[in-house]
Image (cartoon, rainbow, N blue to C red; front, side, top):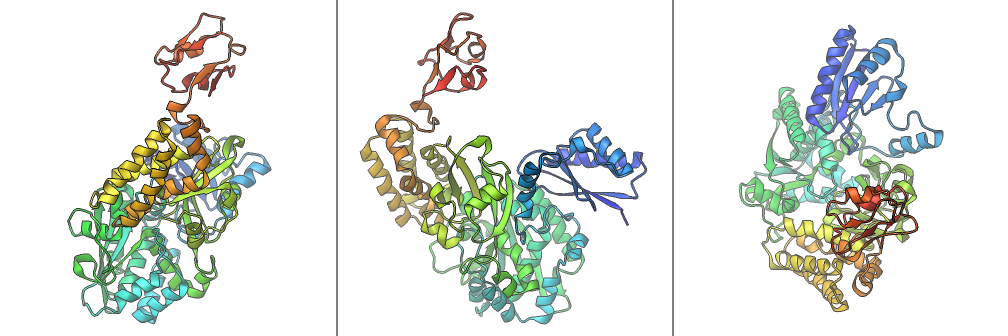
Length: 591
């Protein structure tokens, strides 16, 4: 029995391995190897820093890379019980107000999906079992019929967390009622939205939760085979899934006659090549079959005719991660969380212009204001909130007037956005909304499979029109064309990728049309982002002639003698902004 556990978390595999090796070496040096155990877990923060959490105290150290730092932690904290204050995580040694802001990032969350992530060793099935792991599977197989499992999921009100929000229980019911003797369970772990890392966090931090859920789903619909489709760009997730599957088989929790119930279920991993379109269910199933990932018309839906032509239940990682808790605690418990039509919690990947970047799990119906200001710590540098992008390339922008709208499936659709898989990018007054729409559309154009003309050609034309606007070359007629083309693409695209691609454009047109008009009529970018519409100028009365900007300019566009006011050659200037960034006297402005 160990008296202390050190959990190492971070996102750089090679660095983590070095930290673990150094810690184990130091434990031997201080004769603590039999008292302290080092574990690797998943980081809920989206940065490259390494954190250590020491239990049972719960003390967190941040940015601990370096042998000297680790030596202090081992020799002082683990050997002598003395906290190393200078290495404590951000917020530990700050003012009471700052501490409260930092702690609220965790304390104001409600964790169901993420309840084990960052807490247990994801490569230990025993630690998962110690947190009630596989009890839900045991309950389902020994105390419930398949129909009862389906009814429990239906009664819970769980909706798919992959973006569409279709009722999970209904999907299972369709497959359950099929007479086909061959059925499949598939997990969509092909997370492709820019800035989204929710599914990766679960796979890396709590892989057994997904495995247990898929086995429960298999029992519910009568499937004996499952596939986890995960993108190859998630090597740690793949590795931990492989370890977890092997452990589950060793413990008899996958394979033949699970819990002596007569039920057989096995899992395989299929690697995706990083195609965003394979997040669409029919394209994903086609890819698992070994073909090019392209969508197919629906109906028939996969629950009726899916993988290899047989009934298939396909849910994403977050949806599955809810299942064990629902079976274990009951539909009524899950029903008590969230709103009337959107039950449970939602995991958001909170990023952009926000103090605390990372994963946030909150009850459905939590307001955007609470997520930004109570959990996320607010907008940095005293800037004003401008908009929040939800749903990634398929979603839309939420302006400040809707900060207090409860975030659930129906409310977000009602204001021109969508829940999506859970990306939540915060923007401040320095973001250009036209440029933001262009960014997401560029991604969609690149990721289109090209199967249908509306998406393949239409989105390219949309992108060209947006480029024309940001370059200051568009007319008001182009703005009308832009809007008309958006609706054409939505109405005529084959799958959800094309149908939702215009959403960022339409939502910014709806709420920030004045910015589009400023780009077109005034040839100005109000946020000062679009390079073709901005210029840099030196303020003669403020410039001391120090020459720093002149030395740094990569194209020699700044002229002037020492101690005299400098000037910028606008024909040469590439508008990199380095001069303004480095000027200590605020003598350079962007217009």
